[in-house]
Image (tube, rainbow over all chains, first blue to last red; front, side):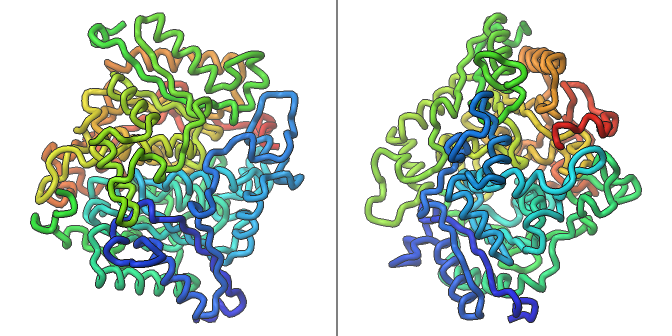
Length: 309
Length: 309
């Protein structure tokens, strides 16, 4: 176990019940966990505990997590007269301790954790709604935004700073499509650019350092051997999370942006897209079983397309 | 009204109950609609009807839309023996007519529409969970994916082709932040790149042509005059939707991609990011009240930052 972990043995593994998604479960698992992602989580958690980490798992489907942000997220209405404002209620409820209990509990898990893992199958190039609803609800005003000095030229603590500063985060994602489709020039868009709203807009926003994602492509087609490769890769990436170089996103308050938060002209001139906001524009985290990807190598032969017939 | 509309006067306006979000409602609206977005929708729908269009609105919050995709989305289990697979059940339920009634109804609305508007406040650089859950649930196998010849070098009808081909789509989004933060070099990432998963991954994926979004920045700070500008802009954009040039996304089956769906080397060489997949890499739809944006023009003076104090 990396030395860096010796003083803090917590990893907060987030995933949700993937039995709603994976077909591979029928072929691989005769008992719980009953899905590929569930199986990977099971293997990962076992390995982390064996390595001496403490792990908390929030299985959003098993928890029947309420995905929709609404007035029921607050035990009392701060502004009982005016029209309902989720942001205003969030600010008051977080400060006064009148948030819904499950919201406060998830916030406690994040504060407790040294590393936060978001594990999910990609749905429509984003998080499934239940996980998006977890972000929407627990990212309260004062917890994930509205932190630090605001006003004038102060834009608050966000993008590299914030309540969750000092923690690491990683996305672990199962993808049905091929790596080539998610490569730098793939039809779906580059996986790093697709993950931008999650990596930069949610995890880095709240202060966490985001390590490259663990992405498993063609997950629905993986055989038992491939699944073991996935599990070993996932475990290796988790055990190395404290010593893995984070995606080099530029900190909002690090001097790279001007007073209206526009990247200074002398930085990455001519670069387009989200790569602008990385200190190494050429950085690509797109992976195949954790290895650097050759996005055109895995040409799928027609006779292997049974899964899409 | 543009000639192009004479033969088809349907516009399907989607939005959801924004009363959960907007504070401006307290200042602007003494009665329903009780929020900025609700007010903009109200104005837009009235103008569309006056212009002779037929409009259907799905107010997801008012509908208490179920955001989480699960086994309850299917009236019967196709595979009652094996482990549950949402994709497999979706495929069978769509074909056999055993989808949840509300799912089938939303699909009918999309098939009926000539233009689909997704109206929402940006939450964490994406759709609120309730709208993501609308996509997750109604984008069934056979309806939004798994359409057309699959297998071998056939990757199906998607990205410019599909069941919703011939329809237009537009995102209307209220944003609390400043336009400069969402500009080509803004700290949040360029709005066009942030919207990629929705524009390209959901709307264009299912075959719709996506026109530039109507984005209202600093929405929480807008005064009555600004809100009227917003309404007029929104109405103008809606009435022009049939004659507005769509975002020039490259069609998957248009010859620009190779047999593993990688953009051919001679196209946009050296371009990085999602702009690769537009026939005009320089294209930027980022707007301020519908006008071409100068992303550093609106420098916010300290004394105007009251809303973030």
